[in-house]
Image (cartoon, rainbow, N blue to C red):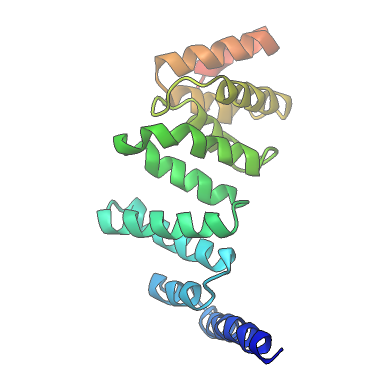
Length: 196
């Protein structure tokens, strides 16, 4: 019984320290190093690793290769502990889109965005753009997810967002969206090219 108590204490003590550090530093936006320290202390907590990954994502967006690698490590750790974070899956997909070495993983990562947030209105346009990106290989399931997003965007009157996604994509993806729109509401097909 004493061994079990010591084991539980060994797990709980770093978690309590992580919470104390988090409470002390979150009066303002903490530096990525601070968030990393919290994640390291709370090593079993996916939410802390997710916060660290999102902090690193901002530096990764600036283009530093070391920051991209740090984001990838933190995101993969966070998602291994808490795979229900669609914003991390989406950021990982965006990172994979620009890395030809990760093309084989791209479709799987984009699918995880859909699996973890099937009704995410806020991320729908980004998700649709990733699903139709040329970075992945053709995939029937992703095509169906993309059709579903097009259908939802039309149903919710989000035509300007759909049009913006349409204009940002290549020719093949544009044809896909045109066919999807024509099968749902043929009268809206001409509005895709209209400025948002």
